[in-house]
Length: 482
Ligand SMILES: [Zn+2]
Image 1: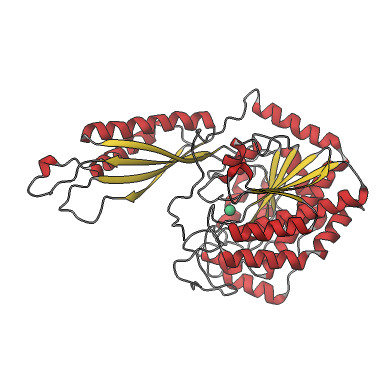
Image 2: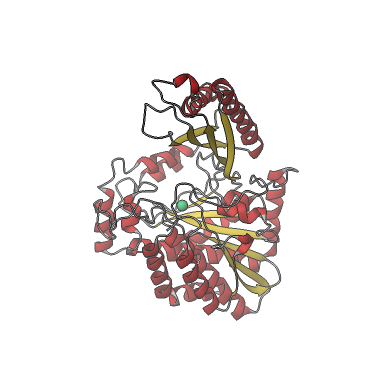
């Protein structure tokens, strides 16, 4: 069978891939600073005969590896950034920093980048052996966490010309994703006032902190009058110092605004801007509106998602040893609500039989089953920059179990499991399912056509407009450059 060529190649290169994933885990480089991780991935691509382009879209840690020629052109998306402050010792089931305050791979992107690369290598082998027409492109996408790297790449046209894009994310269960995600903008509102002695000459002062508080209060009233799916979060990133006896001359708040559609998001953003300007007017301060990043809503392609789901079944979930199960159990027991995710997913299905099937897995420490295919995925309330790829070409993703049931997102438990056998086995499972799906599309051009027709129908005449304004450069908020 043709797919076996790819799957064998994935097995043959497994030890190198595991080593790469472990090393990226150790580097734990945060958004747009992933130089070491990028080098590991680029070296692997070159070794496999891919043509590598570094600095894609003018971003130092973005890159692309291409192999093959002709149609279809299939992209695999890889991420490799870590999260700040999540340093954790690997292989234990208690919270313990490896290096206090240092970053850690709390979202499993060490596996994500390598798993997608492993899939690309498998497909390359298939193209080579069969001589079939097809191009495989691996996209090294930096700064997913708080940076929306793919949106910046999309703005420069990096994903144009793709017939399909496939990716995955580590998780605690196996499923093909058909959910939508929210578009978002991250914007810093910087207030400038006038400092003065808060006791003796307060009347000369104009408080930037007062302006910030008034803005937050205004947005609080706005929340009732936006669509219910919208989300408006904030973090006060600068309160203007620690001295109450000084009128604060500067204050800064970071907003993260989300909505299902880019157009709805833009409208809410303009209303938040008016509130910020109103707060500045009331306090005789000035406000600077600094757009940090944005990403589009995710359009999950059901044609490709279904193929991914079929391939998850065809490959079959990995087997685990007693020792691996015991580690999963120990992590599972460290979680407060270990079945919250399972219950959340069961609630999304209409058919009672599906709900029962999902809940029958309660009691497991690591899930080996594949969730039933959900044709009409519900609205998710998170965001991903995969959204910007999905407006450019048919795009789908899978989630694969790489960690114990109930492991929370962005947690020390994820970092603790990042170099485990659970992680490695899940990563290779994901790679095989993704490679198998790409091969299905290479073998059957009608699949690509159906996926494209679905996207055209979903867009219904709308076109991709990148949410990133001209001149806005990629950066990660709150990360100090070494
Ligand atoms: Zn992630």
